[in-house]
Length: 547
View 1 (tube, rainbow, N blue to C red):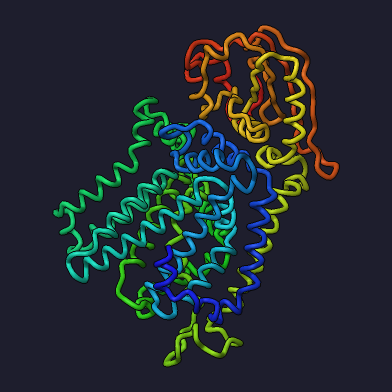
View 2 (view 1 turned 180 degrees about the horizontal axis):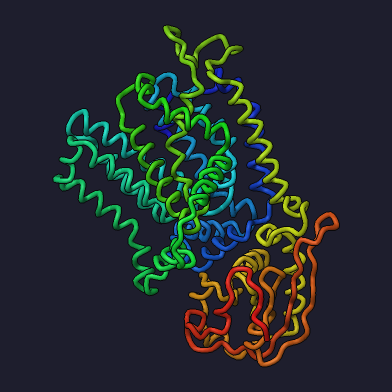
């Protein structure tokens, strides 16, 4: 990283007139990001992945393991806290910023510093990237490793096209980076497909398929990804089956063209209206952008391939099943240095912009849309801060939705569960959903809490029937995932439920029920994975079956 900073003459960055123009926007976004990292209680999925880190393994059911490995290592040193939980986000964001700077310098030479600040302005004001670089999910590492891998791949391919050789260090680095991205999320596949498309589309590059070092790079990639295969070999390929079931949906095949339209509209809105506008302009004017590059490069083609492959795949999926907007998050990161060019006006025949003495007139095209992007971004980010930290925005239009309500009240809920469990000997602590189990585990710093639900999740692979059999316990349910008769039937005897309401500003966000049960019947080994599991009727948020 020191070489990246030194070779780019980073000391000139803060002389850039684009920095002077946008510095207050960037500092406002940074302040909001730090506030989020320091004070916001973990989203239940953040707690879920933190909990994985307390159970080290080759991989996990829902996602690959890299995020869990990092969380486990940091928690072992720093313990549970919002700062420790999101410290990896700070590290990955720093790496991503350095790589973005190097990309801008690589593509645009002396003007790269100005364009770097434009990249930060576009990324910071995108609600999609503010959220997914801030949350301690898998995506922040996925984005960082995908961009790093892509940049190394571009450097190798550009060198190979120029000299017929290329530096294997870049190709090997690209393989390692792509493997690490794959250890974060499976949609890193689209980065690999983008690499393949570049190699297949150029006759010069096809010679690489006859070179041993290409297969050495593939071997490195396979080695980095091997933990995923080891876990799936041990667990009947459950991860791959999970994603297959998720993309198939209900199984009733039908085509919904409006689903694709709605999906693309939501993607454009969450990316940011101005970002999407600049993307449209870039796609229309792409043949005319080559003169702005400092060197011939496959970078724009790679960015376009990854964007096109990922967006096309999920758009098609949206016509027949469910596709979530953030699954397409890898479509955009490589585009930002190219979209920055839509807002930059090089000063023909002048000294480099970073050294220009005229800071009052930054070299910008379309400064008004860029300023609008910052205003819209700050408005969206402020709304997200309120939603995650103060009160769910959905609560203003009635009862908060279940996902949003799950963000609040955990100190009080954990205290109530602890009080109920006090009279019991080595009590089981159980909940009716993975979200509540993870949040309770994080609040209590107790990795042994278990979710009992029909939805298959990582807790089902931690289910140890012999150690659970016959024990007394406390079961936590809530209005979204209620305690059903089937839950109670797992105990020989239960006490009447205790009710706890979580409120914000007088509004009820969530109602919890706490039941003490005696003599838990754990069933056979691997009970939750068997078809006769008594909770198999339930899914995410469904009601109980009639008694």
